[in-house]
Image (cartoon, helix red, strand yellow):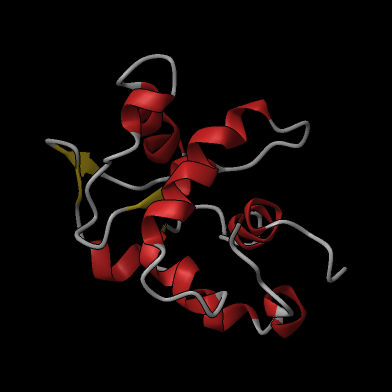
Length: 121
């Protein structure tokens, strides 16, 4: 991966690796990128992803408790849940059921080139 990618672009590269029917967290992505504690920046990247030319599966990124905290950035507060349910993820009261079963950690992707020279500006 190119060293000159922005933090947001590196987040998008990780999010594109999240498998169909799985979810990850803002914090897991931040930790994977070597910027533990910057989960909020990952959230900002997810919010901005709707303007990205590629399809970024932002619906697969939730908070550390499995809550759909980003649902209001999808045009309708129900779209995020509908997208997850179309992938077989069950959601009840904005909470992913069986969160541990559907959680995917970026470490399992074995893509260390994404983490090269992450800079937050």
